[in-house]
Amino acid sequence: MRRLSMYVTLVLLAAVSVVPFLWMLATSFKHGPDIYTKTPNLLPLDKKTGEWAATLDNYAYVLDVGGLGNAFVNSVWVCAILVPAKLLIDALAAYAFARIPFPGRDKLFVIMLGGMMVPAITLLVPRIHVTQSLGMFDSGWGLIVPNIASVLDIFLLRQFFLSLPGELEEAALIDGAGRMQIFWRIVLPLSKPVLAVVTITSFLFHWNDLVWPLLVTNDPELYTLPLALQQLVASPDGGRAYYIMAGATLAVLPVIAVLLVFQRRILQGIAFTGLKG
Image (cartoon, rainbow, N blue to C red):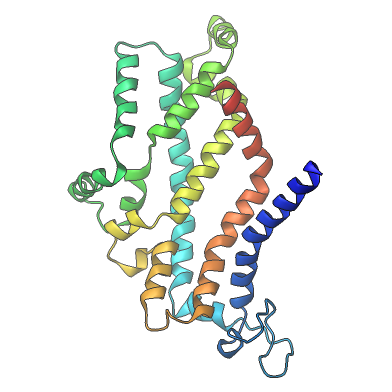
């Protein structure tokens, strides 16, 4: 009985999570008059005849007129550059804090962690001033460079690197390997689960980020997908649910694809970091 109630609860929670997505997907293929009916219907059927009436016109509109096509490309190249660069810099910093002794290392790490206590919103104005002073405001670099390191990711990676056996590193040092050789050939291959978690969380955050692109870009050609979607909602056609749902579907499909492809790595990473962090 207890197991049955657990299964019923899980099915209800799954339905609550999946039904809104199915409604969004179905609405994105519907004609305007077919959305609002007396009897709710997930399928894209004609309101009068009840026949199949799916259309791709909504996607064509948001990709062309709504500007989501260019914004989609911008989001892809921002994430394609930012996420690998961020992962490399965070991993190098975490390795230094975990394995390389240098004067003031622990104090510097504590000071860096203290920065996490400062609300992120209070740092927006200084970050914008720095971005402007470096000449990166309203440019592609302004979307990438200020986000290229994360204290939280450095902390997570450092904790994992500390859990690796020190004997491996000592043996490599005795054999004449340098620090970078140890980092590339020993530490990174053993850290795939936590690297996968950092990669996926970084991708999700920057793919969905609205605030920073909104603050540092004025040129519509630089808009990323969340910003273009917000502009679509605010446009005269923004009240049309089929356009909004088509745009939202375009925004969420890459996220679902990434989660499905890397779900095993994510679970492994969470298990490793939970046990050894």
